[in-house]
Image 1 (cartoon, rainbow, N blue to C red):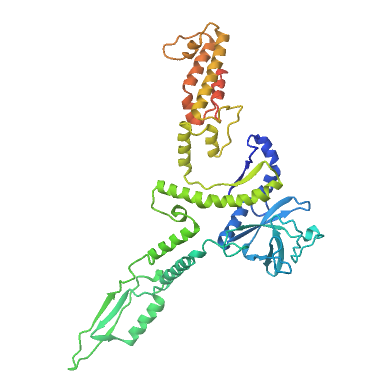
Image 2 (spheres, rainbow, N blue to C red; image 1 turned 90 degrees about the vertical axis):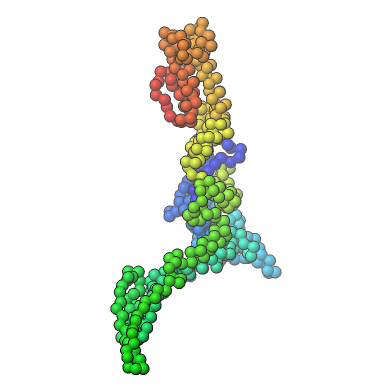
Length: 462
């Protein structure tokens, strides 16, 4: 689960340097929550527990002064909820958690519980020393209507389908190991198989014919003819009759497994593109991913974000919120093409496009029009360039008109001998080619033009 810090409401205009300073302590703890796991791994492990058992737990580690210094995952199968009750059996305060493993027991308290709880026996004691106090637990859970304290995993309704798929796999594995279904029936007409032959067949099928590496082996059969009433020996024939019913289908229970997979997909909230390979086209797959993201995955991420932003982040800073990285509903190439199209027609600004691509917005000192839709940014930049060119022309040739400046570098225009007039022609050529600059690299328009005016031939990329 990737993550990042974003500016909180009221602090959107804070500079990058100020934001980094304000969030340095929080970022340091999130970057190094413990010795074994990154923050992303920590949340991934807790999320795996949550999906498996319905509950995930993360321990909050504090110093004696109350500052948070790290986090640890606590396996959910080792945790039991303890409800403190008064003499009338009424629950008191938030629940307490008992961690039990290998005969060792440790108590924890709920996140935000201000009571001093003993980690040894779970008792509440206002004079408890810090080293004996219980730590807090962040409790991820999938809400269950059957319990106020425990979650329930999503897969519970699909238990029969999951067990069925497991049994199908075991059955198919046993078939390959044992080759238990006979592929041929031995039919003897006008005679019988000798005892030695029957014993040989039995031994062969039980041992020598099992396993895929022993396939296609041969066995010689010998039959004894029968005598008729007149003493004549009957004609004896041995036929091998294929048993094709039920064994020629290589994909045993394929349809059954497909129906089971569909049920598991439904209860997990995942559409086909997330759950399995599918033959659907790209547009359909993209739409299904988007629906799943908006209805299932993103709401689940927001539920976890709320826990951190309501209880953990404010103890460090008020200028930031924790965000988990959202899953993509389209590929990177599709997203870039879509953003490029929206930027060109003015639906998005250059900075919005850069943010979507995971880049920082332009610095306003370098690109003052980065927050404007592209057509407006071009107009504003061209106006500034024209004003700049007019100022240069007045210093080089005060009698030259603005119209003449605008025509510089165009076909049929008069060529000036002044060095600055030559520069002005280059400036207007850059203005005329400004669309291609923006289309190719996002366009720090004014910077490029100023570099050209200063006589620098190198076009900088930003």
